[in-house]
Amino acid sequence: MSVPFYDFAKLHDSDFKKQIIQRITDIVENNSFVEGQFNTSFQKKFAELTESNHCLLVGNGTDALEISLQALDIEKGSYVAISSISFFATVECVVNQGLTPVFVDVDSDTGLMCPDSLERILAKFQVKAVIPVHIYGLPSPMAQINSICQSRGIPVIEDAAQAHGGRYIDGSPIGSSNNLSCFSFYPTKNLGAFGDAGAICTNSHELADKIIKIRNHGRSPEGHILYGRNSRCDHFQAAVLDLKLEKFSMHHEQRKQVASFYYKHLEGLPLRTPPQKYLDYSSWHLFPVQCTNGDEKYALAEYLKKHDIGNALFYEKALSQEKPCTNIKGEFERANNFALQTLCLPMNPFITEDQVKEVAKVIKSFFT
Ligand SMILES: *Cc1c(COP(=O)(O)O)cnc(C)c1O
Image 1: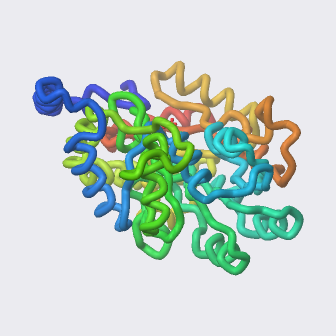
Image 2: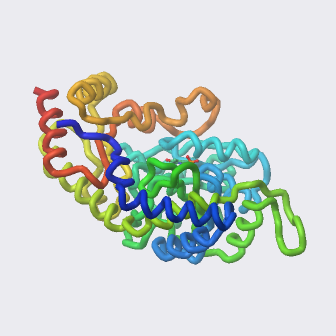
Image 3: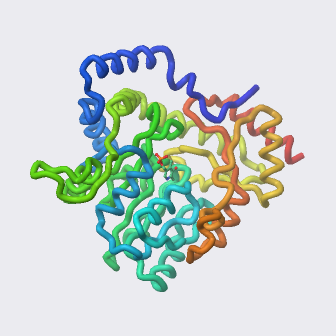
């Protein structure tokens, strides 16, 4: 039995295709190609889902991070502390805004920003913003991170590119905090467009107003009032996202169910799963497991592939090990190990318990 990593055929079924073709036809007939009615509709619904005052669509998740940094008006060259396990965009956004990244180490169970490491970094560097990453959809320890940053007046940008539908440990939805939360709607994310799109959620009316200007060339009714960029979201993409929201909560529950199957059937195997307390909180974008070392991980990845089980090495390296990042300061020892040992098992809403059993069976035969 093969177990696919993603399953777009089931996500984009014939019913969905029919509806999206209708929406695209309407857009073409109305010549409403950017920032149309579906942008407005989606922003309103996604703000409701995340319990935030504002959801602002932008061009992609990387732009969401960059625009957030720009909206905070941080003096060029300042340090921005970022989690050392993430997709490359988290470091890129800092550098491309003329700021200096500094790495914070991660918790070795989860790959999430470690509050103790953050405290040490803040004691050593003049940090002007902090970016935790809800990696794999697991919520970062925001109660601790927020309290550390609030007491020093440091703004927080949450990289929530993988965390749609997830919850903080206090139960409130990711995106509802008083931070800027950045989402990506890249096609493989939990909520995916037919191309690139992203969004920023915020409770601040003032920052929302500024973000609206930045994403559209600094335009305001009085003319251009700042140097922005073009990061508007296409109406086509908004139409896809708006339609996909209809089944989003159901798909989220299905992902959670798949995670619970993994917990049940991987039990007793020599693999480290994310702590089970995250079951009701993660968005379950991915299901990461840790091997005891890199050799074992690569051998297991090969073995799974041979048995038709989808898997992926997210992230093969910590950000600190990427070529352009080798001069960046900070803490990343645990991150380097975490990246070396981690492999992601198939995760999408359509995986059945039988398929999870198959994955567990193959893993068991690998270890015996
Ligand atoms: C996908 C992703 C991004 C970037 O989003 P894009 O829409 O691809 O620009 C940033 N951070 C993380 C953690 C991501 O997974």
